[in-house]
Length: 260
Image (tube, rainbow, N blue to C red; front, side):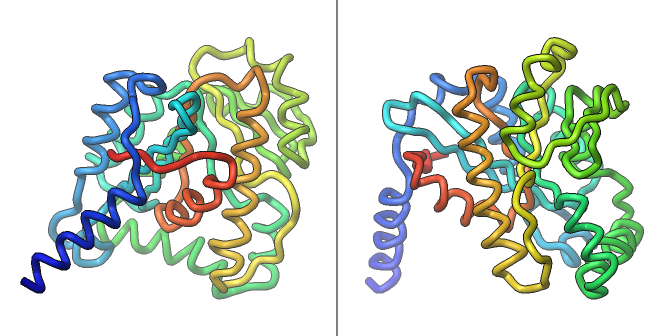
């Protein structure tokens, strides 16, 4: 009886936190199929032992009447061949992508002032890739090879990872001002930076790694979607630890989780 009660409680909780959505209003059959496949990928062998079972976490969000969708693709940054290929296929399936990435000013601060955080972002990640025979980049780095990419702090706009223009972008609004003159240069995809904006003093605390950065990213997602040149359902690519906080923050702008 206790087990039955627990199962019912979990089902009720799930039904409260997720709604029925007409996914066809914002996603193609191909996109839905790839996202479901990505969600089912799990590690095996040594990789599973060292890095955990899951590779991708997928959350599909929509507004009332499914007028606008957002796909949160939470990824483990260290992946093997199957997962890497899936990341590339997802990038190709979505023409609008929004990418996590610590801004240059914060990256410089980390390298100069925070050895612990610098190690976890640098040599420790490289070592983990070598130990687990994962020599493949993240889905974020794959996206930058395919389409138009803005790099705030580096004052660069890339096309298929090659610099095509030097431009200073300090806010999401700055990125959007450049968009009209740049967007016609590519049909392969648009990569918008999630972490452009206010400098956040880096630390190893959750208040920086997750909370403050989530607030910045969620705000920029909405700023981009409010612009008429930014069309379609965005694939928001970030570390999977960000998914719960991002989904919660986006509720304030009318986005609720869909059953998926």
